[in-house]
Structure formats: C-alpha cells, structure tokens
Image 1 (cartoon, rainbow, N blue to C red):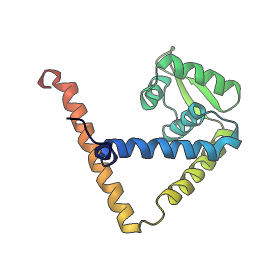
Image 2: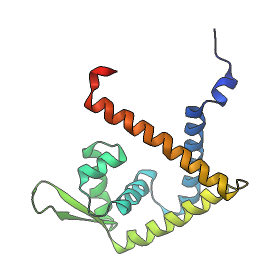
Image 3: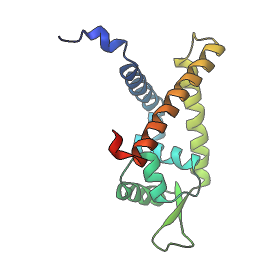
Length: 157
C-alpha cells in the first residue's frame, strides 16, 4: 500500500526538515550582502559558540571532515577572520579564535538570525513559542540519549 503524500506533510521529521531547509534558504538570502558563503558563516558562528576550540572539535560540531575544516580555517585566517594559535600540549593542533572583525560580524549574524526567528514565529504567542522550544529540546534530548546508548551498546540495536 502506497503512502499518501499528506502522510508526509504531517510527519514530524519531514516538517522539521522542511523548516530547516526553508529557514537556511531565507537566512542565506538575508546575508547575501556580507560576501560570505554558508560554510564560512557557519564556521564563524560555530567558532563564536566555542572560542578557542581545536580544529577537530570544530569539525565535530560542524559535522565535517577535519581536513575540510583545516582548509576552511586556512582561507578564513588568510582573509583576517580567524587566528590559529598553537596548542600548548599538541604541536599538531591549533586553537581557533575569531578576530575582532569576525566578532563584529557574528554579532551581526546573530542579530539577523534573531530577526528571522521573530519573522518565522510571528503569530505564535510567547507561551506557545516557549512550549514549542521546550518540546523540541525534549525530542533532542531523547535522540541524544539514543545515540549515547547506541555508542555504549552497539549490539542492542
């Protein structure tokens, strides 16, 4: 028996995927004038959330290969957006830091993201917004628990 298309329209996974895709596309449109690619502003945004992280830690956060993060770090360093500082205990690793220029940009990106969030949540009263975020964080916590359990007991799946 074939699933009707309306089944997908009401599926949480499809809804979340569509919302994510549409929000990214709108954010890309709003930041187009900043002359940064999506991967560049995502790199800077994640680094702003984890100042001083290593390239490996950032790669994990971005769900990217370490070599890709290393290449991107090189380009962003050359453009004056980040600094790579030697790791005290590991000569092969670097700690990544935003430059003041990048810190100003991430504040601007954060402001743009806040305005976008207000726009796509318009019409939802504050209590419903808070409940929505609370419920989605609960779903996320459940998924993280499943992931941790699978890592510790891979044979039980």
